[in-house]
View 1 (cartoon, rainbow, N blue to C red):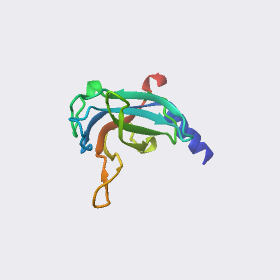
View 2: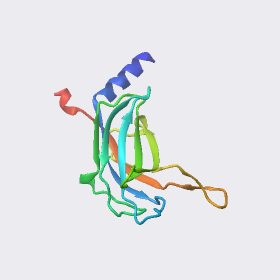
View 3: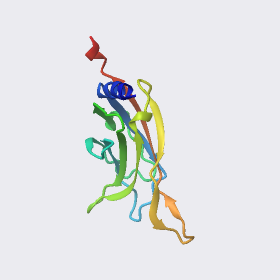
Length: 155
């Protein structure tokens, strides 16, 4: 069992997590016009330490359903560890402090090797309660990711 864990850790240590933000859907409406959303991506180890951060740019006046081009919202995290997860935080750019919209995480162990896979993840529920006493969804984020091996290390 310990040997399997070491082999898996070694494989992940020789791998890179690559992907891109595709879109968000159903982001909550903004009181003062359209949203200017952006996404922060970071890898967090099993012990809670951050291991790198990337950002998808602000989509000015994008509203509730922004779409990013592959070339502008790509991320690449080298040397991911077993038990790590990738976190996505969606915010709205404002003149003052940026507004938090929602966030989600996905364990890296669930992302396949060398197969680009699209994931649509919930950004959670709003902290605000409707008149009916229910919390509303913060929308979703769609990302495409894969783990790739460092093939050049093997000759």
